[in-house]
Each structure stands twice: as C-alpha cells, then as structure tokens.
Image (cartoon, rainbow, N blue to C red; front, side, top):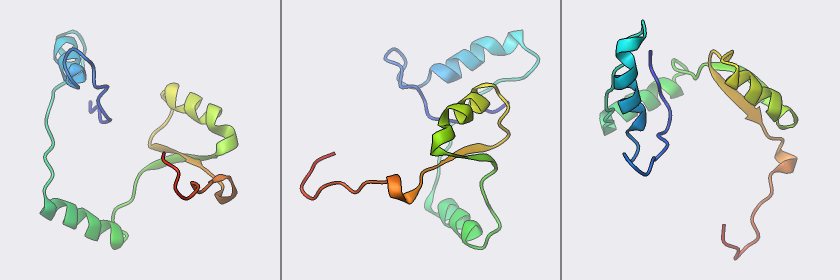
Length: 104
C-alpha cells in the first residue's frame, strides 16, 4: 500500500505522523505498511519532463467534474471510488485577475 500526498504538518512530529501511524498499524493488518523518503535530483526531473513532453507519461485521471459539481466530486473521492486523480475544471470566465497593486 502506498500513501502519497502532502503531510499534515502536525505540531508534535512535524509532518511524520503518517509514517509513525503506518509503522504502528502495520503489525495489525494484512497489508505491509512502510516508509520511505523520496529525494529528487535534476537528472530525474529532466527525464520526467522529457517523457511528459514526448507524450509517454500522463497522469491517471479518474474523472473530470465541472466546478458546479465539486461536492459530488469530493464525495466520489471520499467514498474511495476514485482510481486516479479527480479534476475540477474551472471555466475561464470565472477566473479573476488580481487588481494591479493588490496583495494576495
């Protein structure tokens, strides 16, 4: 089993809580849970870019939902039905440019 996503940045263990929970849970379930630390380097990132640009690598997209259906999209994800990324499309007309001189 692989758990891949951003850490929660917990105050106690500073982002390692998922790894600790996996180690504690592993003896009690059929799946083997472990940890690893990914380290990227320029050569790997260049190779990935080349594969993407050549059309040989693409994200696994389960479904695309319009912004108006964001709630069902999240429900689909939380129900564990997604078998890839869930995409929420935002129509260009709803994207507003920031006012010049404003701060985010």
